[in-house]
Image 1 (cartoon, helix red, strand yellow):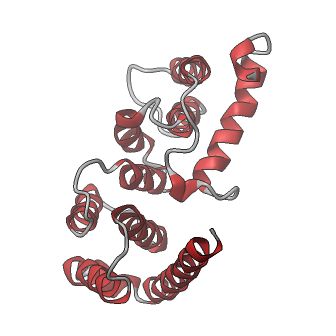
Image 2 (image 1 turned 120 degrees about the vertical axis):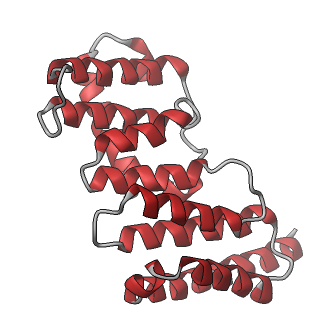
Length: 215
């Protein structure tokens, strides 16, 4: 058991070191990377292939997800929809498993939330409702912020938005969706987790007698 565990631990440590090195590069060269996304993602994939030739598909793809997360967080300007889709396209094009992009879509949604584009964020998030309960909470959060007047649109009053937020949290409680399907956000200080706990606290206030919130 010891012999099997140790090499994997060493590999994971080396992966973390490579991730830290690339994250540092991204943060220092964001503008150049944004202007040449195909070359950047090709470089990431080539580095993984060279450094970890036997890396399993999941770890390989998780690494690319992590780099994409760093890149979008480092982007200083509010990104256009075209830039976001271009980034996703190149990230997906260099992953081994080309199906499903839940993690990347949620990364994009969080960037949109942080830049105040709540309607667009909802469009990305609703595809994964009940896939991970934290996504439900993020959808509810978008509606809740809109209900406070930050982005009111014609024909839909803020109070209606709050009702949407409440319904989303009820759906979360009753669906009992898992909370561990998006591993990149498992750190306690991850933005998605912060949103989840904020909305759960609100849900306790909105539904003090709802038993599903206490399971």
